[in-house]
Amino acid sequence: MTSRPASEQHLRDLARLRRVRDRIDREYAQPLDVEALARSAHMSAGHLSRQFRAAYGESPYSYLMTRRIERAMALLRRGDLSVTEICFTVGCSSLGTFSTRFTELVGVPPSVYRRQETRATVGMPSCVAKQVTRPIRNQEAPAPAPHLA
Image (cartoon, rainbow, N blue to C red; front, side, top):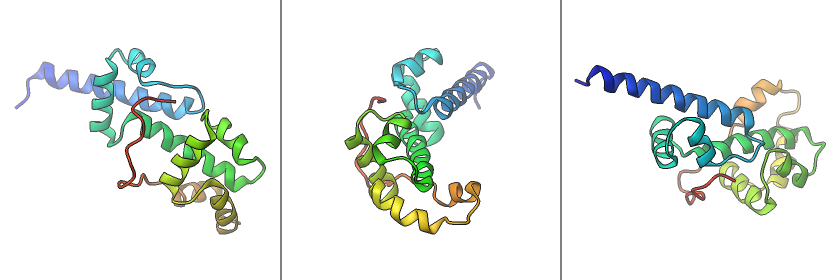
């Protein structure tokens, strides 16, 4: 049985982690790093990373990249921006890193995804397309860099 203060601390930590996750969801296109996220949550970077992984099953960096790739997928389906423009629009600073992470999460490079998915989601409401095309992190892929880009 856990003590009341430990249980209350755990609930406070979970609330902080939710705020960090919500911030990533809102500000995915901004330059974010673990240290800044940790400061805003009043935690050390290491503690935030460990607690975030325990709560959500992936590191803050992985979560951020998944949000960025999700948004990139929607922009690619829309078809009016180049892959390079989409890369910078979603907050990535390197086309190479963006393409590598995109391929890692989605299974095909961004240009191939655009060709395949534009046809596959024609006529589908965007809320449904988002759900059925949501990236699922490849568990066999190499772990991403430990810092946020």
